[in-house]
Image (cartoon, rainbow, N blue to C red):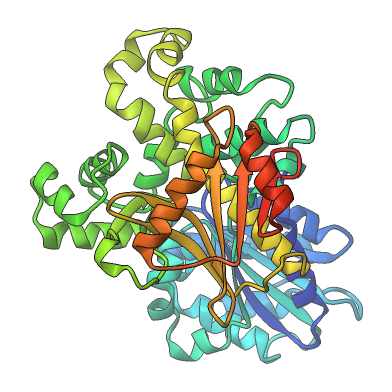
Length: 454
């Protein structure tokens, strides 16, 4: 079972709070929300209801039947308030009331959230209760739920918890059989989506899993990218057109305007929706003095699997349906995969620095970190403390060694960015040449980090 343990801990902390509480937990499909809730409810007294796609009156009747059966209750009237009067733990223990996919009720019934609020304020059931509202409708929760609830109810939600994807360290822990290098491959291809990681077979290699999960017509992820986008956003054809162009390298608004044929205003609206659903992100270059040498307004596909799909499979979809999985992999994925994974190696290196910073193992206590995207070259990592002292990093994924010529290229980009550095963290997946090793021996500001340390 692959779950986000930090969220489990947060739920437990809310459960231990005195009094009644309303907690809203939401996350995308395949976030393993149900498995997380099962782990949380273990050893607790609870009532769980899974909402259906049903008319408002039918939904209410179904919940009433299940409460009647669970608590041997009888009702004077069929209302949510009456139902919540009948739920009870049977003792002094706190009851956990779970309404899964609650948006299917809240969208159609104003009385539901009003009853939840009354339950929270002990107007229906005096015993301690934790009301846990679950939803997989991420865009609705973030953009529309407050208006649906009304201001009075919205203020009474004690905790809003978003189920984020696993970070790289959590992916490594979920796949203990894999090396760090192999785990970076998994992370770059499917990201940290718990449901995807749960279906990964760590007994076989990266290629075998891609063949089974994505390139096989009945693979679990064979239509996952389109399902993810279409589950929350309309006009799939527009979104897929924009994503395909971003994946092909059109990463600026003007590039998208010129290649898609859509107006700038239309693109901006659709990009905003994709960003709200965590599918794309606008990459802002780390702030330095060299603005005249900096690229501005760069867009990237944030979701790792969506990026993989639109990078390798979407542009070759005809052959995807004509070739065998092995043929398709050999022709379209094999040669470009390592270059594709280089971006995710940088993300892993940043996460490594964040962890070291958290446990005070860096020579500077950093306050912000990012990348600098230049017109003539990039700086992979800039990490800065509160008095603007810098750690600058190179991340070498593809080359067999990190060479001093790479360092000299970094120095040139730093000059363009108009920044200096107190320390250089040199990350390499495959090793360092002798010149770099000697430089690190002679000068402590050079810190070498190989794959094993990651």
